[in-house]
Length: 142
Image (cartoon, rainbow, N blue to C red):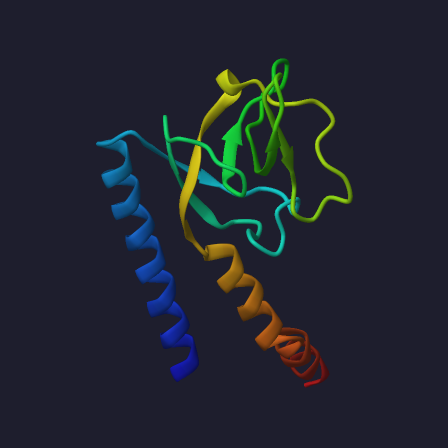
């Protein structure tokens, strides 16, 4: 029971932090983005909330938010170099770099902070393991 209250309190703190961060970000030149894929694993996990600074200078090693022409979804990938055509990007978990250089105008901003919601959820699921399944099977037997 105590563990449930601690988890609930942590969840409440994370939600309040995300709302406060969102309100603060909306007043400035920042954007909040929720991670939806695994291409930046282990640096970013699905459901992590990222604070992106628009108009920030970009250097090698930075994680940037960009949108490629013809695609609806924005992408978070790491800058691994620069050519005359633009930035060369790569998802940390991807085996190869992205095919086409990214034109500088496609970059929406640079990652400056992460609220590790997905990381915490992943750890919590790992710690609880099969506890729910075990409890359900015990209940079914009764």
